[in-house]
Image (cartoon, rainbow, N blue to C red; front, side, top):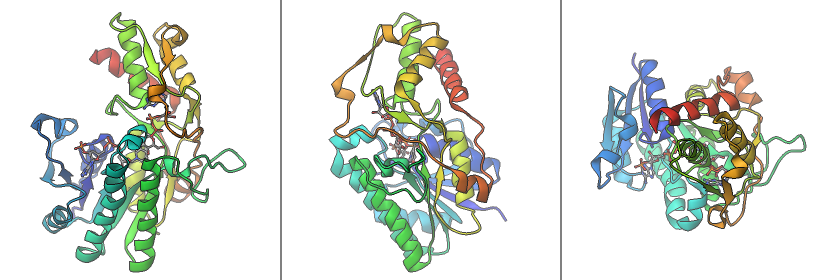
Amino acid sequence: MQKTAFITGITGQDGSYLSEYLLSLNYKVTGLVRRNSVAENQDYRLLNINGIEVMYGDILDQSSLLNALNKFKPDEVYNLAAQSHVRISSEIPYFTSQVNAIGALNMLEAIRVSCPGVRYYQASSSEMFGQNIDNDGFQRETTKMNPVSPYGCAKLFAFNMTCHYRNAYGLNAANGILFNHESPRRGSNFVTNKIVKAAVLIKKGKLNKLELGNLDSFRDWGHSYDYVRAMHLINNAPVVSDFVVATGESHSVREFCAYVFKKLELDYKDYVTQNPKYMRPEELKVLRGDSRKIRQELGWIPNYNFEALLDELVDYWLSKL
Ligand code: NAP
Ligand code: GDD
């Protein structure tokens, strides 16, 4: 029988890739879309994807969540809705906490009262670890969590609530602890697309400098397409539990710049400057994930490495600009 998935945050980077992936597996794909004053901005990432059914709603509007669950009767729920920008979360900490923490609680409560049997995926984040790293240099499911941003604190609340609803009420609720993942559909104020877009504009003579924040932070960057496959595996795992999803490779923002500019036959040092505006009140210095659990238990393997991801971003911006 055809399965139905319900996705909050369906208009985002991951929501769009997850929709495509689930449609390719013959799911009925449904989702929640926020009302936007410019209607064209509501679902531009979904415009080329046929067969999705959406409803207006908001993760902060409990009635819209209950209406959607009653209407779509999903087998699987993916809660991807979030204010997902870490630095901006320091400018709008209250709003970020509402959406990322209380929003997840709203979804869990809506499921508990209306459809407690569904499989529930919570979009948790490596930002929850803060500066904690195990002695071998990796973060994993057992690593202590001490977030260093309003975003990370709110995500940790949602993570804990997801575990609590699983333990207390028997919900099939799981966390994916995902490390950074990117794609051409990533918002261009995240560092990856910000760098690549600017480097291509510089190459084309349309820009002459790129202002960044901390060049010496390290991230474990993967591709969104690989990571939405992991979400589906987690939501169909034989035993409901939490999984880290990561490539295991970590690179600095500086290395990212060097690779992209070199590919365009430029030297990043000639163009990149630091602007305190893009620094964070507390920087998370290093992320590097150990994803052995999902690889061994669910057979997940990423297709993209660091270079393949960056090559795709460069090709995308070269063709777009
Ligand atoms: P994204 O592109 O920023 O998408 C966020 C989505 O949430 C958008 O569809 C947005 O809708 C929606 N949303 C925001 N506020 C909402 C609200 N109040 N009610 C309903 N929907 C709301 O983020 P992403 O990269 O796809 O990430 C997906 C999820 O994974 C997020 O929860 C993020 O925090 C988490 N995550 C991401 C990464 C990563 O590296 N990408 C890593 C770990 C965890 P609009 O289009 O209307 O704004
Ligand atoms: N955005 C941005 N802009 N980041 C910059 C800049 C800049 O101008 N300059 C340096 N950086 C550094 C940040 O300080 C951070 O260390 C790194 O680049 C990555 O920043 P982002 O791309 O904004 O991602 P993030 O790591 O803060 O958060 C992303 O990954 C999390 C998982 O670890 C987001 O996708 C979160 O939603 C996600 O949970």
